[in-house]
Length: 457
Image (cartoon, rainbow, N blue to C red; front, side, top):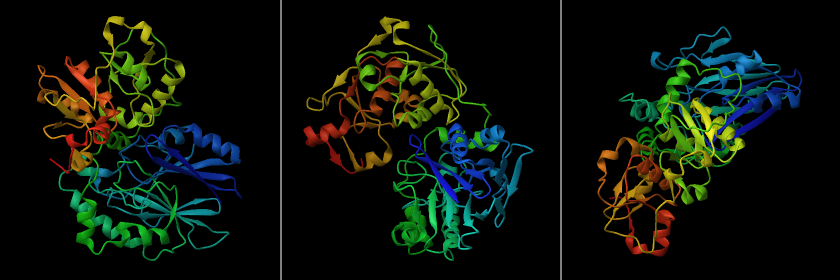
């Protein structure tokens, strides 16, 4: 048996290739749209991808299941569990619907379907057995059911998809689903769908794999005293779901567009549509383009883009080279932002629309200014600057009317990264006297700690 883990660092998302070496066939579980990584790995290992599946209708990335199926001719296996609101809706001759107890056979291996609702109603996990070696199950492809140190949050349907009244019901369902682990051996390996940094949970560990025995001893969810205490704990302190999660749910339910390969971006001399500056933070701070939203290309790029870029509208990237533009377009495609029309170099744009970012100092902070905190709610609960206004950066575009246009505004986040995005949103919206707090609240806590209060407002 062969298991290969693929990790999408910008989304904290894991997918898996499971191969039977004896019969040279493989299945891919929870693929992203960048399918080349799976086909290249399979070819290197001498395997043919004959099946592809996913654990649930994902909220945080656009599924590559249809893309991989179209490229390889593999059979697609999808959950037929859950209620009518969360059934897959795309019709495809290659699709086989599976339910609790069904077996997917891959050569000498089998993946037993286990219905594990709670995170979502249709969620399934796969119990992997290598039959020539042992009839004891080897692994659980857990998806967003069980993580290292945590479990999948049950509040996304309500918070991200506006399905009111589902949070507590989902939490209680998830608690009961965890009971399905009781008869499984401690030796069972747990391969989760996400790692640390994912918004699909609040305390995910960074290890790519665990064991059921270890999770039984260390995972809070498997040690909850009772159902009520589990519900209270899991529904408290969860991070805000990014705005794009709702769009991912919709697109993954309907069926993502098959791209037949990741996009490459043409260079143009005139920008149009949404303009997104993907240059380095240093380049943007030195010369910011006032008609663009600034999202420096880096580890957080994809998630931040999902917060602030509008779906269905053309996108022009400001980049200094083709390679960065193509990488950014690839990452945007992983969350369904397929409308990257072009890229442009800064020198092709009107030089009169560029200006250095106004920087504010943590040492000489102007407390008479309006202080705008663009961190997440969880961060705000831990510390804040008295008198500051809190609008998370991902909600800023929809709440601009709450801010005065005739007053100096100093924007801050934790370290100065998200505040640069927020600064660009304000400048693009026509705000005049905007300043970015260098180093964020972390710098203030080190240099002027008296300006910061612990605890929530």
